[in-house]
Length: 132
Image: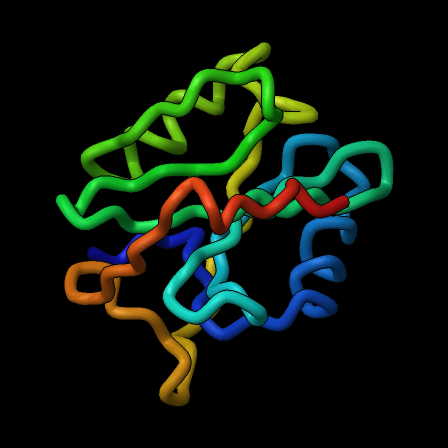
């Protein structure tokens, strides 16, 4: 799977620069997590800040995202469906996703995630709060 808004090995600082460049709320992209191997981060801009939501791949190959604690956990068969849900307001994010930031080129290096093969197992004991 090759999503145009998946930036792979983009650092948190590089991500913030891209998302805040236009000053538009709802800019978003997906990148590899720097602190949790195998996890992804859905990053979205809102009021000149970037919010990071971790995405985990479950044993069954489905995806789960960590949003507000009061939001019911939902799993998705693919990242396209996950993104589609959060384009609707009121789904547990600080703002709905509105403007994907497309990757300008291929991300070199070993950190680029193979979305089809990489599986990160997560339990409720490993819950991580949404990062501002």
